[in-house]
Length: 186
Image (cartoon, rainbow, N blue to C red):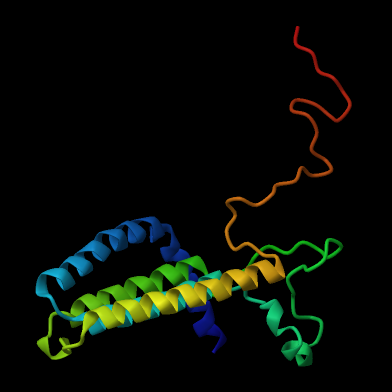
């Protein structure tokens, strides 16, 4: 069992150098999928299923690995479980995602390929009234994102590094010298 986990970790580590290429490929396949749906005027249920799956993956990507709202439920695991810092005196711990970026991309890529493959078979072209699916999807998206943003505000975490406050460390001083030492140019 342990060897399987190691194989999975080394496999994802070896392929993570191709992540940028894979992301470019996915950005090319996304419009291809939507163009296929638009030109065929069908397969709306597959597009809806893909959208719901990607929404679920995105929520897992935004969620911390140690969810602070589950603190009371997780008490049986003991104090050895790492927690997000909630007070200014707590030790800093980096934000760890429940679904890492590579797995988020990989599962999204696989689901897009499967969805494109399913649009090749007319048996999956189930007739549905697509405006209802679009309204339901956007309602679900806005409600879940509002809940996720409220969770982020309540527990004071930001899953993205852009916009975070950066503090200078104790050992960092002015450029070119130690703190308090003035360096002049000759």
